Length: 293
Image 1: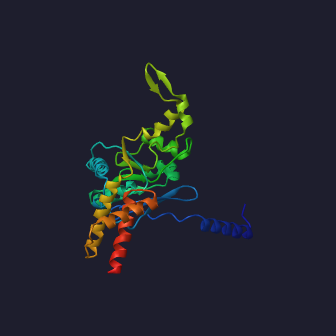
Image 2: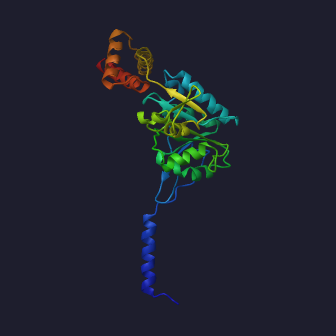
Image 3: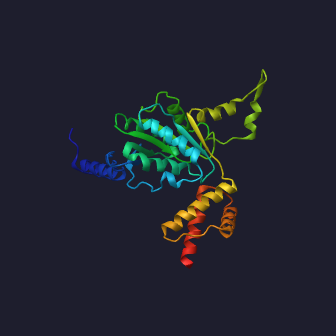
């Protein structure tokens, strides 16, 4: 049975309209020149899109977190050498350098084969598709999800838990997962969660609610905690940044009590003491001081 010419023309218009609405397939990534990519969600699935420019931060620029840098860098070096290495949860106060550390590692080790794929928390349900595209690649990939927090039962929560558990969707040997969160267990914790706790033979056993909440974070091989700076730590980081930034401009500024007091006041107004706050103050202070000169 032959279709009427008008029907054929109408079907053609429908197909052209549908093609216009569908996203264009992302270009194939050349990992020899591309060091980082985003997973970009489309209507039905998604794809990897290259990130052209890597953030310029260096590991040396991350001040006041030497212990944390050592742990994460050593694990990453093990991974790059093909040695056993762990998935990592970087958790703690905002602005303390968790995500900046991962990006700084990429800048340092991209030449050694390190690649980073950024995945939004809600897109972790696509982990099987992402890791499938990385199998057999001669590079080492960190799947990086920043600022993650879940509610129990979310699809992304279940998928990440399965991947970390080495179950059906376990990543290949050239893939690790690094996640940052403000919460140690990635899930809100409430006072009522502890009501199910029991004392068994002198030991406290968590209730089911708590057990479920720590079951995800417990699947990360390494936890790295980032805590707020003490005032002395904060001022030391400010001092180093003031010296670095002013020297970069060719004018070394004097570190004295006046600067210390201004830095403390800045942190009090912000309600926080962290590496980010220290850098923001130093940038403002150095810029204002040199402008007046």
